Amino acid sequence: MEPNPFGKKAMLLSQASMLTFATIMSFFPQYYGFLLVIYFILMLVIMYKYFGKHLKKAMERPKGKVHYEENSKELLETDPEMERILKGQMSQSLFSSLPIMVLLLFGFTLWPTITHIPNPVYRFAAIVAYFEGYTVLNYFLNKHAMKKMAEIPKPITSYKVTEGGIQIKPFGNIPFPLKDYEIKVVEESKAVDLVSKKPGVPSYRLYSKNPKRLAELLLKLGKGIEKVESNTA
Image 1 (cartoon, rainbow, N blue to C red):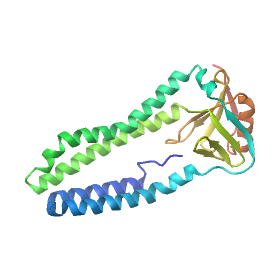
Image 2 (cartoon, rainbow, N blue to C red):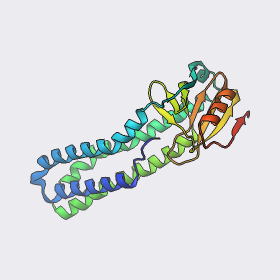
Image 3 (cartoon, one colour):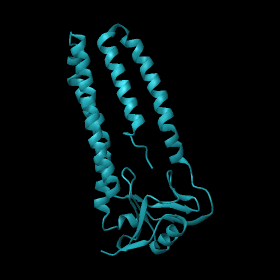
Image 4 (cartoon, rainbow, N blue to C red):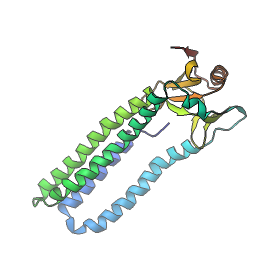
């Protein structure tokens, strides 16, 4: 599972850092350069601690006996839904990078004007409005992206199924139990879909030369799955 960038801790951290930055820029501009360096160092440390454990967890390889292994890139290329899936992945990438692009665009246009507002109170309000606008935009774009993560499955062509979970090559994992997923056999695509039942958790499409066997294994090893559905539409 990927860390939610709008969890409570992350949101509070973002708001606190934004208010600190706005205060320095507005009322203590003479210390701006020095405090900016300290600010970014602290942010790097905090973000490393916050996201580091999520990254470490994502990089861990599920342990246990290997029950199934697949390398089937050619199945993705023959999937009737390949175009829809790849377009969905591109759309998610675009929405993920759009907030940064907007921030940079505004940084070259609005930011010089904001920082030269003579009244420190007005300057503070303008800086807060600037970053709050970015936060709101980022929130809705990420909300849309997380919704699409559940609707458009991420294609997986190379992986191992172990007793501890699914090892995705070259990196990544889907640990057992699969309590946040439903299993669906997509016979015409020669794949098994792990359909997300939880917001912010991505869906996956595992390509397989024997999708029914794979689904049976996931049902057996991934506790929490009630039944295997077959989609022949």
